[in-house]
Image (cartoon, rainbow, N blue to C red; front, side, top):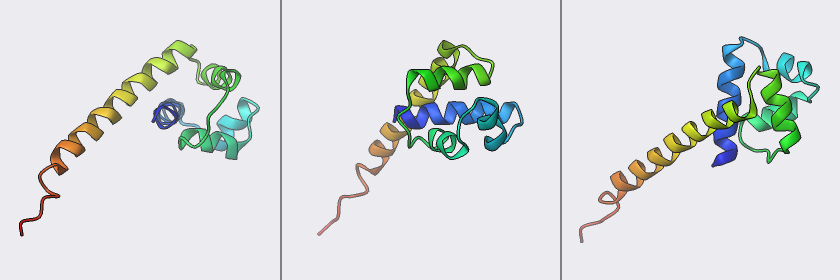
Length: 94
């Protein structure tokens, strides 16, 4: 889940800069397909690449992680709510 949250945070900040994945990746010296896999939460990236992304977004690593944590908490709360809602729906009367 943390990879997904980090990817969503990166995407959110990149979109605020109004720049495409391709232009952003090129600006930080990263392959577009690699960066795309970061945004989709499919990549377990190194600390060096996290720093490179944060710098490209004009953020500190701690700012990027703070937003990642906020998103992660939202995902976890949503998952919990989904489990609570589905708790009674799976019971079948016989």
